[in-house]
Length: 115
Image (cartoon, rainbow, N blue to C red; front, top):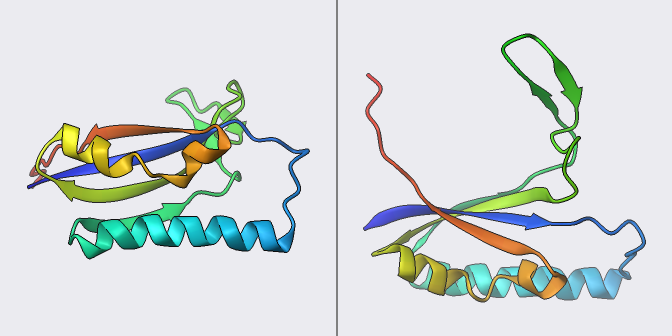
């Protein structure tokens, strides 16, 4: 079985101010989706990413925030196991980020031995 990373992208909407009930409902969708994948034994891990960060380059230029030049942000990631890229895409179809106009990038993880 191969490992895949799902990268969640969306365009932030500062005007969107969900109620506590809407936030709870959204969280429930995420828990259900993750639980379905975990129930198949294919869940590895996931985390949300904050909007706080810095970007730097070899010349020592440091920029505030990882999203200085782009409108779309990476809001989190998900690691899973699947037999193929097609299966990983199929598992990602129910991702709640899609309900909010976001997208999911599915990437195969390349295992390397750096020792």
